Length: 498
Image (cartoon, rainbow, N blue to C red; front, side, top):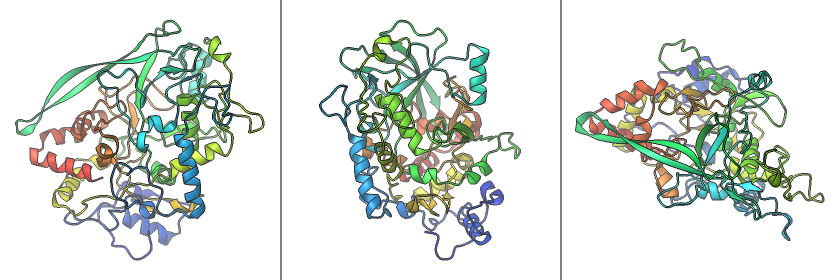
């Protein structure tokens, strides 16, 4: 992707000015700085702008399967493993014991029977609609504040990211295997708020409140912290994993030294494979460092299936749930020491790592180019960093040295009180969220049949998602509120092209 010559673009960003990467020669670093600089003009599209995922970009028809294609530059063996991983991603796990011994291990408590049930068509989840009895693609995280000096030390040292609710664990499971009661159900109520916009227009934001209905194991701890999560879209994860950590650190500005009101911080987490502290990249609060660990935690927490990186055979069962802990597990000694032994997790991670980013659409459209200019002028790129060049030394050849356009800085930002879940996780406060990548956002309705956005799907369209931005993004949000209606329409048109 980076072969050939490049036009040196004006307005280099902070990353371009300060990054020194161990994987690049001085010549290559200069090329990377040039190609990742801000555009000098918005009259035409930038070179390679359509190829959002570099050489891995899928150029197939953007239909309902747009998020489910493999990286376009996979070799034969990579494509084979992608298909095997896809089968495991769709696999329906069953309760133990079972005649299908390679498929049992479900639960005992769970939110879904397969990865695909939450990440339908590898896309974005949504809140339950009117009349829906469960929230398969959305769940509640649970935790309690530290109660003792030992617990406070555990949090401070990074030994644990949060403390699970004593009875119900780290998340609320609304399904259970036969013979065991589900933990309860998520209950959501909404309050509408009218937001006046320039030009006589009005938007409406819905403020959600979350509670737990029908708790099966008694009342929750009185200080329980609840945080909703919708399943994220799966595209481009391997490319995000391949962004050099130096590039992410270069964008952080925790003390706002440049005075722009934006003070992104890196998330520091513990790598389950090595035990070392490292950069967090994945999840709504950047709580996981790798695609493999994110996959392992989802298998254990959402489905109740153990793996070498998360060997929790009873999933999220707690000591207070004795009946749950007495249920049979799906561990088959002849297959391995966990319910999903190697190569199950590596194949699932390979699949997740290589779900291709769809090609951009309408990059040269006049309204899209106008919206792109407004996106830059309002300061959206202060968090939604448009582009990176991935590292040369990533172990996965298809992700090496690619110019990508994810529109994220991978950092934690204070998004204001309105979006706060008041639930700290690791180094992230209750008000902080990782900047969500925007690539593919314009195809959400095509793939998933809805336009619900943000961590809990409260925003019903892209404009509402923007209007929820506060904290470090408040100044940019206010500019959108004050725009002439035709400018707001152009900005949304640009986002729909991503």
